[in-house]
Length: 435
Ligand SMILES: *Cc1c(COP(=O)(O)O)cnc(C)c1O
Image (tube, rainbow, N blue to C red; front, side):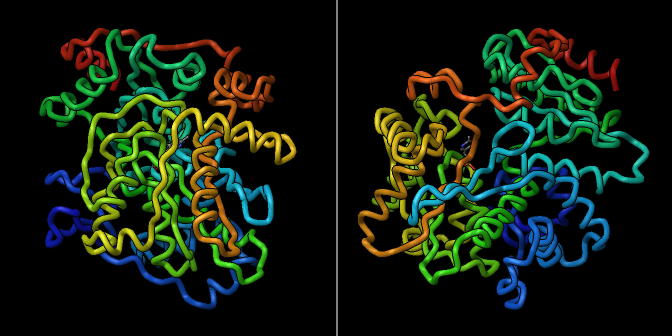
């Protein structure tokens, strides 16, 4: 398997290089040279395949021998160790619950798979690998949980003091073992600046094997294609077309869906659901891509003003607006509409609690179905557990909701964090003293 940069299609790198580098030097994004179609026999036998079998088959075709089968099996077994169940709301509407992992959001799939791949490629290397991540809250939790107890790898998570939620802070600071949290007296941008400077410091990079766990790493996208197949296999087999509705921010999830379709999954339509940060729906309407500063909303993991995976989607569509518009329909909704949808899902579907991101998805699916007027199976990706947004969800529904045990226990655990300022010299000294 080789990968190219969306900005220079002549220079290829190996999977290992793409995973460790994260971003090509030219600031494009890595893309697989080929996304092979899976064998017909496999696609026809989906119902008999486990989630792990599906992941294995996809990776075997994509990686083309880079990783021996037995190692690949164990990488997938370790990464994909929680389910992605489909819940039926009504005959036209299914919810794909992607929140059964440790941090209660779909990002667990990508983070765990990336951790396993890095650990595999780092095997036999005497030097331990140190992953630096700056987080504004959510990504850090998934990355910390994903790398927890991974052999040969240490993780340093930098977060801005007092600027992440209480539970998010607990997710970062209570794991221990190979995970260290650094509480920075500054902003998220300060955290990011410290990480960037560390990568530019020759002294550091000569002595410590540093890597990042960037959200645009190709290793995070690949396992996200697995659950489109996993969802498809759970749907009733009645010949109606299948549409996937994806609540989107940086569009990693949707891009992974496009990979799945290229591999042969019969997806009739993708629907991009956004909050008022509607850069992609606007592009689908006008043909003009106009990034702009994000505005804060209730579905805050989708508050993105310049979606990083746009370049990957554009590349997949042969850089034409028309192809883009054919495969993806886009809809955007306000916070007031999102709140109303959460209440409606609760009252019309037996008290099902959907989180604000999933609710934006429900709205977009309904808009598409109303316009299409044909029978279909609609699948909305539920990207996070509603308990992650407890105060909002309880206020909107006017009732208490059940917090999963794995989140509830965090409140009792003791916080351990190293407190630092925004000065790079001090951060560097700390790194040198500790690794
Ligand atoms: C990250 C995230 C999203 C956005 O996913 P993208 O792949 O960036 O489009 C949506 N919902 C939740 C809960 C998230 O954490």
